[in-house]
Amino acid sequence: MSDKIENLKNKLRQLTSLDKSFEVFGSESHEYKLNPCLSETEVNNLEAKYKVTLPDEFRNFVLKVGNGGAGPGYGLIGIDNVELSKIELLGSDFLSLPFAFDGEWNNLDLLQNTNGDSPNAYYDPKLVRGSLLVAEYGCGIEARLVITGTQSGKIWIDDRVGEGGIYPLTSHCAAFFHDDPDIEDNLYESVEEVKEALSFYEWYDNWLNRSISQVVLLGAG
Image 1 (cartoon, rainbow, N blue to C red):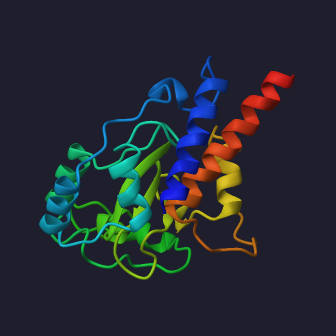
Image 2: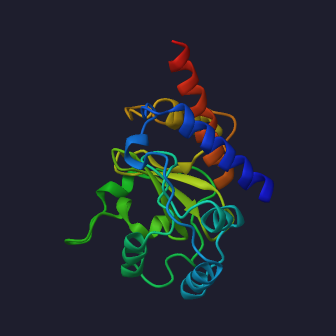
């Protein structure tokens, strides 16, 4: 794991050095800066409070790299107190209950189901329980790290705002999100063969690799 962490740090330093004018999408927001790391005690206390064990790659990142800042989309959110406050409104067991999906989901029929003044069933927050918001790609599209369940440690996309459903962020998806962040239609081709969600490390590394390539190409042009 330490080699992976050093690899990410080295690539982030390279990207920071290359992209002085913040050409990469979202970089003007975070300017390639990282928030201070959390301590082992802080992480242990959080895990105890929410009755979870953070996935190893994410846990090591917030301990040894930074608790959010530079990252995919508008930046890595990390362990954010505002987000945790929102979670607590949904119930103390929101993170500890298992994530509901193993494959892509988009039941648009639920858009017709309403219950008085309550939001319709399609947008029910319980559909992403067991996961933590880690990045926003714009237009309401969220990247979520699964904390609990069979997909623990994987990155999933929540695009219910655009009626795109909930689906694994595969290498195919990452090619779109990290190369063409101006989100439009046709976000996800369900015909793709590989449907395995990227792990946290793979996701962050994918963003670094594609961002470095993008800046190098711009420089060459």
